[in-house]
Image (cartoon, rainbow, N blue to C red; front, side, top):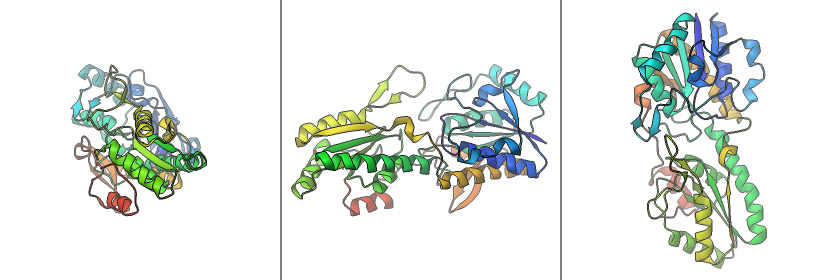
Length: 357
């Protein structure tokens, strides 16, 4: 038995842990694992791959990134926006299928987010033996309660807030931290709560500059002369607009810059000095946390078990502390968003955090 694995989309802490789990579990079954480089692109003839043995995965559990490389561009890009899917051309699929057939790959494990799994679903419908593993630091796939990489991203946000807080207190400033989160604000919400943020602004909850400014003025009157504000990159301005870097890129627009705009506006409304900082790709890099190492490894092991059972067209999922699986078709294009009246949001408000509404 020979199986393949590839990583597709953005990099994420815990990808190597998945590879470690796949290779280890496959080796126990006497299977050979082929790792395709740079995502789906590695499938195109003549094929760009490496044989993965247990000795190749020694020490990778703690490494960020992926030893196989990844890409969110190329011939297989199938995601161009929320709910918008551009199918991969049949000619590209047929070319890649030749590689799979010639190498006698009996199962292909795709580790990726919503876009990559959308491509995986198309390949499954074309007759490929596909198993999906969810990968998103945004933690926004509804079919799984948590995905590896999320805890690492939140930990990075908490570290950033801890550092910004000392500057904020020293200079009696407002410090605004912009974090990732295109559609869902889980990173901002969890990171903000754990990092002691006073204001958290999310894509799911419309905010008012005036309400945030009044909240900061009240803190100032109470003797709290510094404030930490966390904002997800996908939070909409009060006029409903997203702040983008470049609207002319192919696929989904690149978000960024809302932190600076919020900082400038709050300085104007409060009269207090304000500064902004953007974490950006720091949230994707570095060593995964212990939780993400274990979760990634468990996902990899489960993917091999699904391949052993012939349960193709399914994606590994995590619910109630248990790793299971769901049909890929039920997993893609269904985002898990922060509920404005959800328990975590209400808990944040109960301890005095302002969400701008």
